[in-house]
Amino acid sequence: MEDEMKNKSNDATPASVGPGRGAIQRPTEPRIPLMDVSALSEEQRTMAAIGASSVLRMLAHRGDLLAAWLEFGAHLTTGGRVSMRTRELLILRVALRSSCEYEWANHVPGALSTGITAAEIASLAQGTDSWSDADAAVLDLVDDLCADDCASEKTWKALTAMYDEGEIIELLMLIGFYRMNAGFLNSLGVLAEPGRPRLGQGMSYETSVPPQRPTSTSTAGALAEVKLDGIWHLKFYHPAATQELRLVLVMKEGVLSGSGTNEAAGITVPISEGKVQGHQVTFTTVMTKPFQVTITWDGIVDGDFLAGTARISGVGSFPFDGTRIGEI
Image (cartoon, rainbow, N blue to C red; front, side):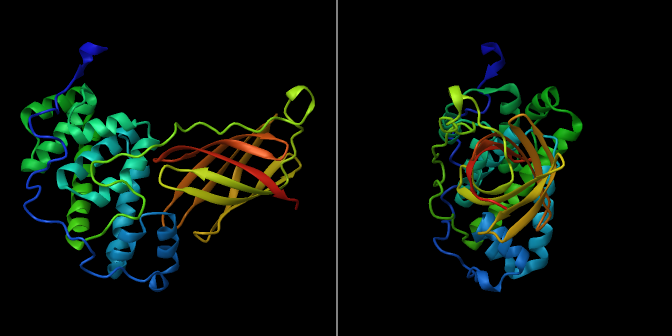
């Protein structure tokens, strides 16, 4: 294994120092005022409530461009062939090379959710870690494009040894997309939301494992009898922020149905593909606006307690837990 690890991307220049860093001072406040939330469309307000509100409120001045930007970004996120881990590692490198604090601040949580460790994020910022051949090839590709808009022969050879043609094209598109983002985020003075890490800094996040259920009240510690019907209050633990959800579950003739609501975002979606096997429950929710996001929920029920993992397509897996708060 050690023979396969190389520090191809650890050159004399720290990773946090991009080309031209310091030559142009980044704005400390928005150069164009963020659009007031009340002026956003319903779809834009929904998206802003989920996350990345500052950039959405900035781009809302050009709703047509915002829509196109969201569509392409969603395709790269949910429709890509490159692994989520590789994508987030690439984005963090672009943020460092572009000195884009907003991009870094928003993608450190995403990187953690894909399995990139806090230590790897710190090493990426400091330029001190050794990377696998696959990771090093991608990081070198970012460096080449940020430095001179072309992959070197050395980088190309390394890429073709680890990725197929379609994946290489996707990597180039990803780098281009996030370099573009860095350019308008920096120039417009879009500031990171409060509580997010500064450029080059990390944040703490526990491994995405389902929280432990409380001690069962049933005999000999066995799981309590399964009864899903009711109104549930869930907490969905994402590195950036904990989301609170209202879940309505209905079990009828062996079919699980219901709905999930994020009241803060004003989103209610139906439950589909519901299955119950013993104490295990699985179901799917699909958000269609402002773009399609599929979440697969897999949990264990114990009386009035439900805990498990939610997998968001193209994003990662996150723990959730909650309790039944009412009957139907």
